[in-house]
Image 1 (cartoon, rainbow, N blue to C red):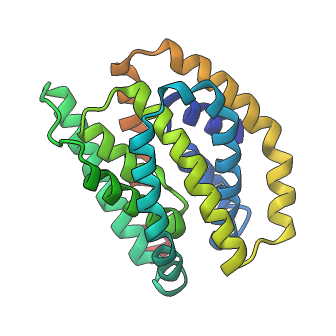
Image 2: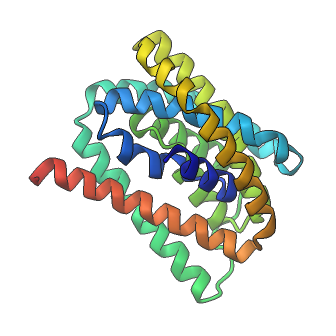
Image 3: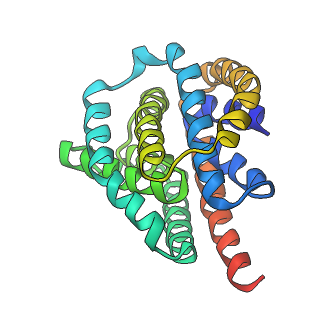
Length: 240
């Protein structure tokens, strides 16, 4: 599972948590799963980043990171005080809505409905920082923002991976200080690193061979899967 999830993230810039979270939830409680995903996602980003760093939009990356760092403490506070069902329903509904909107926009050939601006970059980073602490998924807010702004897919992929490396490192540090990281999390993460590395290397090569249209379609598909899974998990927890 980690191999496939890392391959998907290296190919489209996003998707590790979408595939990995459901699997790990079968093995451990949600609070442990979120911390494990943070560790492995950071490793995935570090493995993939050397092949993409030339395409990173550095000013955009700085603004996204600043926003995420500002919002991260709030996300950690909400993580310990907000009922998980409320967070899951809200996150799943919003992500699914935007995935449908992006698919409709691209199908009908409309231009970018959003202009990328510095304050918008910071705001998108802030939402992503909060989402990382709450549900372990930094990708959807930034991916939605960049796709709405019509950014080139290679820039989207590279900047997302670089952003993940920074925001997951900050989240890992914050978790270790505020909540703690059990030894079992580190041991399990270390045992999975070879699969993550292999998936990331193959995903880089696959991503280089896909055009912008195919990469965007994959990214939107992963986004839709993330939203629908989050909604389904919340519904199962509430009514199952």
